[in-house]
Length: 199
Image (cartoon, rainbow, N blue to C red; front, side):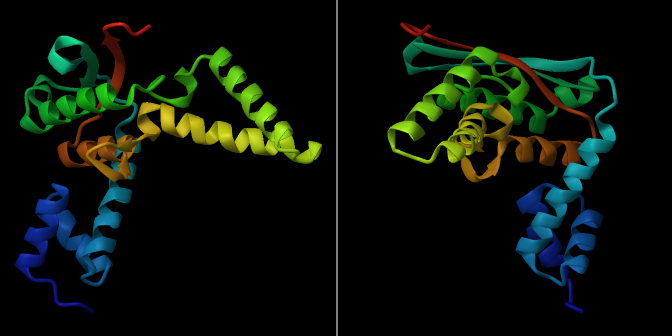
């Protein structure tokens, strides 16, 4: 059993934003391994998010981000349960970061369900045609197209995307970490991205 001291707890707390007791428990469970303890807390964040998913979210904020001298802008609505959380620094920082991320990555939707069916069908046809062009066997065509489509969705759905400021985590992980830290249900409701000369 590893000796867990206050400095380790403090370091993990600063790294994850989790509570002192959660950090102690994570370090104990992971025998003092800081990386494993961080992963343990992230998994716990997922459990916290699932427990809170049914709660009503009647508060939140609409965050804006303007870039490139006014040639690119984003509006994003993020909901939470209380105005106390909506006015917290953590919530505001998260909202700003999500708006900047959307400006940088131009996602097609928040989750895979938000991607229009016509775009999915079009991409699938392109991937099928590419596989045929490369001379792949007929029985492999659909499997190849499906794999490429899954990659396309991961790269183009906000929650699945790698966070631009820390590509080691997905936006969904970032959201779940905030839910675990704050203790309230939070959701990215909708967004709009505007670009001069864009469609």
